[in-house]
Length: 313
Image (tube, rainbow, N blue to C red; front, side, top):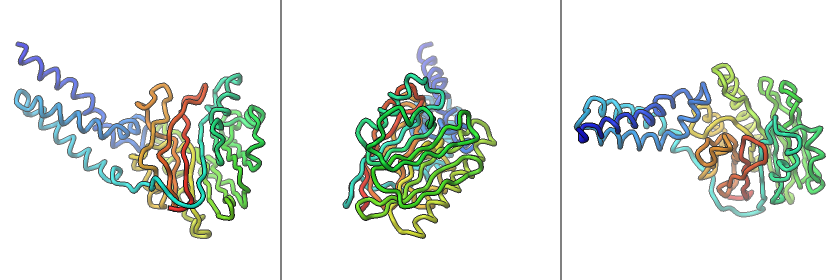
């Protein structure tokens, strides 16, 4: 009796990773699909192990699991082979940091949230879901004399996306991607230009929002391409992209030459730690980037990111 029970138990447990594989094609439509595609590799391994263990007792079920694993693996292969930024470079090095402060963060906690993003004295820092009327006074920001605070009028409390820089801002522009603003700027870093994009796209809570997010990512990619065409300088994009690196929605960024680091830690949901998904990103073009590390932001549902970049590869 026991010998018959264990293959059945393994088969039942195998339905979990199989469900992840089945949901992964919906990454462009829904955040559940984003979660599934993020864990695609692990789900593939577990599904194939389950199929192998139950092959003799349940050959049809095992065959179905294997077919599902192969199809999902083929669909996910392009994302797994996307190019990555080099981890060491030459020339000027900069410390960068990014954090989503969380729109509904408690007012009493917001100063600690800002302070945590700035804790290691980054040369460039970006904030999203910042509330200018409160967060500008939350910390001493005099170490970052060059600042851009761009409100997002369509959102509650007109929260802002923010660029804090120790380097002069030579030019900047606020862009509107279907009601979701983002910033572009060009900095003077010891005589060398650096383009910066600060991003906060739509959260894919339903199919329409997911389509809006895809359009926004396409606009952001086009802006990146236009910046480097007009001025062939390194570029870094920081922000809450609401998109996992394995999502099909990521493709316009790759085509625009925006590559991610060799490892991208999970940033949401904060309480899941490394078991969450990576939707906040630091991307680059024509630069090198050390793999980012994640840190906890008090009161936020996101983890922040820190790293070092080099403006020469």
